[in-house]
Length: 460
Image 1 (cartoon, rainbow, N blue to C red):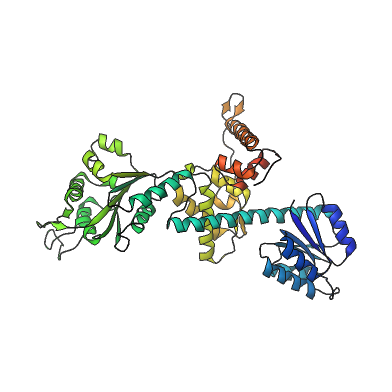
Image 2: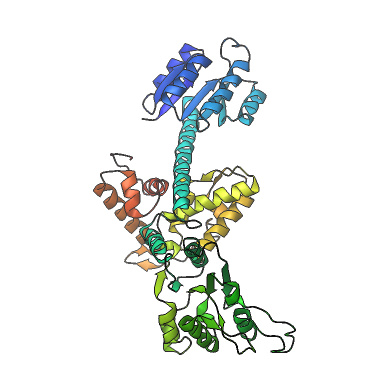
């Protein structure tokens, strides 16, 4: 049972609150600042109700405000609800500015206070979940710089990177646009013996074919109109480092031949040149095209595929990564909040559920953009679905009949059955159910609330 600390010098009010709230919370009582701070250290309650009129200044607010300040210093995560008398609104607002979660004016209406308490406890649980996710992110960051993920697919990617990075074998990274292929290439470089050398990326699909050869291989003076000096290409700049050929599926066939020659002999020739230039560069390539189809229609050389794809890494789409969605969303929000110097703390349970239900056609890049935009525009400390662009549509979608049910009703029915089956199998344990479903704990709570489900058992 969650702990609630009631701080009030009036014993009658403390008793009233303990009687009225005792079924929902373990109610701790304190009549002074000293008693409150002692109980705070011993029990670390999530929420505190604090009457500002504490002894020795029962007629004023100095002792109560001092108590609030010390609670904030010792337990920043604790939510403090200030209780004030009528006509003390300015003092209450001063307390909120000093870090109180909310305020409530006497006389106490138990039903209204219960609503405020419920919101405070929910926010505390959500913030604890966010802190846990941030801690996971920090541990993951130490494991693989620049890449984050807890799902099985990403853990396998991390393990493969560590093994492959120790060699100079060419690597081909396959995956949808926005899945982080360049980050994987950079991680391969950082984990390799070449990490002190250059990492040179080039997008083969973003440069006109007439310029791409010169960009890659360089050119000699006078080799074409405007070539007024000898210029080195990306291959030479990548000497003793890594050359990342992004969108290699867009590489013209004529340049595929020159790339194949380099992979076979580690030599290149500049445009307009005849001398072989030895280059010690590791090749990492990436594409989002269907390589098998490109080979079949003659757009990509089969012999080059076997040379470039000694090691092939398949990056999963974001929609396949389960709880990684909430992990990455919290990471991006943390970065955006720090950059913008805004106090956007996290996501509501509904927002997390919306993030995990969305299909993410733009993958990680789209997620980062949505979170960054929400952090810029939102004024609330907790992001809701509409902040992320998941508001209700202006017009409801047309119903599709499916065995007497609409498509939405059929999906909800199936979703409810899956949640029930998993929760029953896991004996009501939220943590294990979240792992099985591949979502976060707040998302499980949101699904249970959505379908009106209640289970007894361990919360993990």
